Amino acid sequence: MNRRRFIQSTAAFATLTAVEFAPLQTISAFAKEVDDFVRGPVVKDHPLRQVSKHVWIIFSPDGFPTPENQGMMCNITFVNTAKGLVVVDSGASVQIGEMAIRQVKKAFKKPVIAIINTHYHGDHWLGNHAYVEAYGASLPLYSHPGTIAAVQGVQGNMWRTLMEQWTNQATLGTRVVAPSKPLQNGDELKFGDVTLRMHHMGTVHTPFDLCVEVLEDKLMLVGDVAMDRRIANMDDGSYLGTLKAYDTLEKTGSTIWLPGHGEPSANVLKWNREMFEGIYRPCEQAINDGLPLEEAKLLVLKDPRVASRARDTKGFESNIGKYVSLAYLEAEAAGF
Ligand SMILES: [Zn+2]
Image (tube, rainbow, N blue to C red; front, side, top):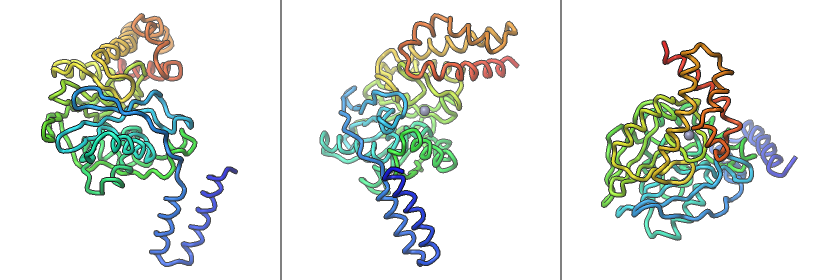
């Protein structure tokens, strides 16, 4: 039993015993102390980097959570406005949030004044905890109403627990701090010199993704609607919805696409569109030809749009089988 495990089990036992003997206030005060004490370690500093006039990121080199990276797998974005900093996607733990706050305090003499969470996957909002601790409980946390309901509901604790498991408990101590201020398609938030316009295009990566357009910079924060050299988790998403969303996004006038995973560039949508076409279209063809899933998988792996990207794509080997199945099911459903 390692030290942290020992502390946990001892603490759990102590809490149980305390419940029987102590008055209620003492119990909750004690539970808080345990929570503060049993915390994963500090996350090492990752540098801030400027992407456009108003947009800065802390880049995450890894695509997936591990004990070594402590859940550092999602880019954290800061929009530098005359009124203060707006965070888009806060990272996967309170420790990552605290690391990001250390970086912005070194670089800017202004507070964080709002957070936007693009969707309910935990690597995009679990860091909220650190910001409300640093900037107060009245800090506005925005998201789509569907994301708000999901994080307040089962997705919240599910993602907190999953992240602890994937990181061997490096994220321990992180609390679920759900967004509460709703944003809809077309809504604009104005912060002095910067306008943020929301895009919700139906089911894309999840049913509730928001893309955040930084109008003055012609830059689009796409969350997980598009990725760069990483295959997206499509369990809650739609291939056709994604391709349709790219048509909409391409008409906005944005020239830089900043994804939650991978490098920002002018080519992110194109890269992702070709990858998804290469997965979905062979499945569609297989359905039309009455071929089984196994044959569809072979067609996908042979498709030049997929084959040319496979080696350079994080998570390809472990995820492609599952995501072909999802594409096949979607093509089957779309055929009826
Ligand atoms: Zn996601």
